[in-house]
Image (cartoon, rainbow, N blue to C red):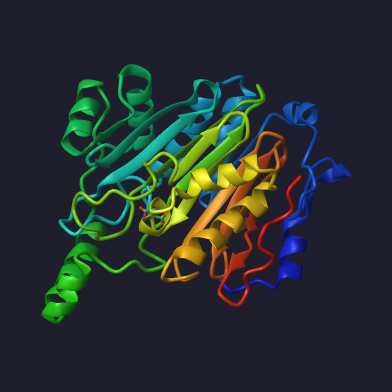
Length: 350
Ligand code: ASP
């Protein structure tokens, strides 16, 4: 994605819906009064263009009277079921041992409840397993063999084995690894992160009942070391929901999000009065200020507040995210931050 000049971004973010009923601006403008939002059904925001069909499914669930958690789960199930998606679900890129290991979590604003699963292999819908952990156990997170045992005991169906394409890709990667000089192998362990070997669906929504919910699901970083767990299932890192304030989710290199509790930080900035868009930007500025790599981090956030205002931001040229509300369903470009394009620090607090 090429960098987008700020003026063009503002145009693309200032979307309007027939009759001017729905609008969103990058800076501070309220989206809709809550009553009107409720009449529209809900607002669903997720990472990447592949989030759009998931958003639309989530909205349908809500419009049919479904609960917020059903909308999150069934929406994310759409992405997890897409065998062509190389970064979510069992169609994802395997780890260094040739096994697809999935991470997911779900969070309910009401009750501040959460469930999470890490390094789960063999099951196509980790978001559903995460929800079951939340609803039926005393725990928040299960990982690895224990998570798979739980999923089996709970009657979750196992998914397909690796396809020939996934196996070929993994074998090619292994051959390339074997040909590398020894010091380079030792330094990296698994594969280097590249723009095309990791992504996540992180979805946050404001339901017609006025409550916030979120979830995320990923196969993580392609050819990662076996047992590596990223930011996505870590509450506060890949996802965070505070029903009084807002919800946020992340995508990008998890190691650069989880060291900073990125999604929690976005929500905390919204608590301080920042618009969701500014909260995402400010989180990235704060992380980049501390991190030795500065803005060279490949991290991105989406955020939604209790009023239905939404936003997103990423490092570099930013990233595309999906927003669905009433009859409006669009993929938008987030702003991006680099060391030469930091923007005003501090944001516009209410
Ligand atoms: N955050 C995910 C991970 O590190 C990958 C991504 O969203 O790009 O596992």
